[in-house]
Length: 193
Image: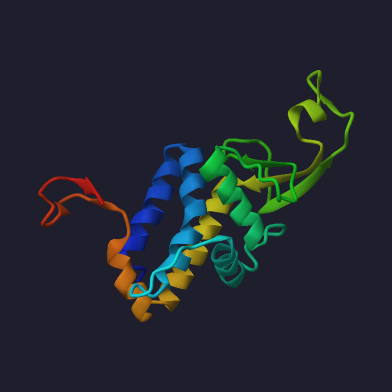
């Protein structure tokens, strides 16, 4: 059976370790970067280009069609942009007024993802929905499922691309922890490079 490359596996392991350590923000951020990484690995290294919303969404739509109930590739891209650039899940083009990741410790169980509609005038502990900026569509996502679904799609993709020459040439350049360094620049010195 074909295995996922160690370069990509190290990224997945970091997401899994973040989940185990309850570093949920970190897990979400790295999981949301995985489609960018995979899409970029397919680029010709002799003619490099930048990933963008279209390449991100196309990768998600091609590889994660049945992973979520209410999230298409561009929805995931908007989540990625919000969290990576602004530190929140909002995006001016998002179809959701609020995105919430439900943690594994919660008594609430969300299967995959659901949309709840909160009507204006609803109050939560004396604070109105408008004040909480949650009126409208609220997307609720199971945090562990979300991260796992992205990693699972990337694993399947990676195995299918095991013989792709662009992917194979780009893999060694992925940033990852290198416990023995990156010769000739750092030898015997743990390095992230």
